[in-house]
Image (cartoon, rainbow, N blue to C red; front, top):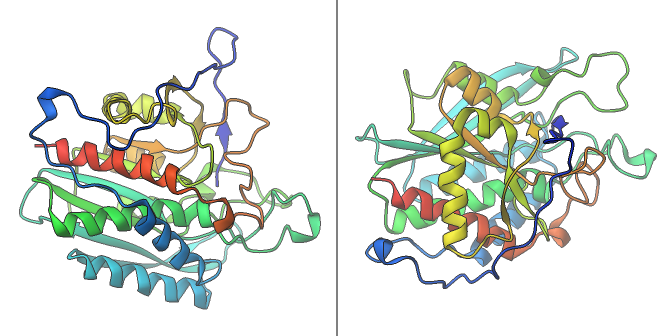
Amino acid sequence: MKAYYLLLSLGGLILFAASCKTNANRTLPVSDAALYVPTFDADSAYHYVEAQTEFGPRVPNTEGHRACGNYLAEKLAAFGATVTNQSVDLTTYDGKTLKARNIIGSYNLQTKKRVALFAHWDTRPWADKDTDPTKHRTPVLGANDGASGVGVLLEIARQIQRSAPTIGIDIIFFDAEDGGVPEFEQNYPHSEEAWCLGSQYWARNPHVSGYTARFGILLDMVGAFDSHFLREWYSEQYAKNINTKVWNAARSLGYGRYFINQKGGGVTDDHLFVNKLARIPTIDIVPTPTDQNQSFFAHWHTTNDTMANIDRSTLKAVGQTVLQVIYSEK
């Protein structure tokens, strides 16, 4: 994925300290005592992450991609969602055609009070960040970069089927996010529009004519060990109040050591085009490095983005926080 732009404030590096110890069973404030929020099952989410990786890399135009897309649509339907498949031919930076598929699962269709939850389900065609140059053209398995966000949302879908929130929820899996210009490519400009092709298409052509939502939350790379999520810069510009809502929820649940209440840099990701084109205020929960020489996580865009580096505790922190937010909406 993506370009990352580190923004420094007053010439100083962003500094942060881990806050209170995580406690998944922490008691909520008295004002929230009557609020029902399901318990996010991290083992279940881990299973959904693993199930995606068993298809191999999910690069568009491959058999693994086609089979995984069917799996995701079938799981959403099994969890009670109304499923829409948005199949479209998309053009890559170098003129190739991708047989892409955005997959949407919708709940409580009769209400206009809606929240959109996003993740991308495709994987990087090239391990162009690998330390071994001979692997740069090897497709990435994408346990974290792709499968983790989808796995969290599948577990949220399972919980919604069991006891739905009062608002409508749309779970949207974007395709063709991770095919931006590889670092070894010298013949094409490295533009942000080369990324996130599926979300660009959906933002211009939503699955429902005139679709809108109160806000959106994008999950990207939310499963690695020792992840820290800062308030991503574009999210702050377009949806600062949603960032505040999410980070406050995380703190109330005891996940402050994951959700650092500091501003981070800007990431070219699916939320950017949802904000710009669909004009739905949307944030990105994404691990934000504090140094432009750092990666989003240790194995980003390498052949080591595997299940060995997926942490159930990180999945739990993100998933429980998102559940808290959507079940608090009225």
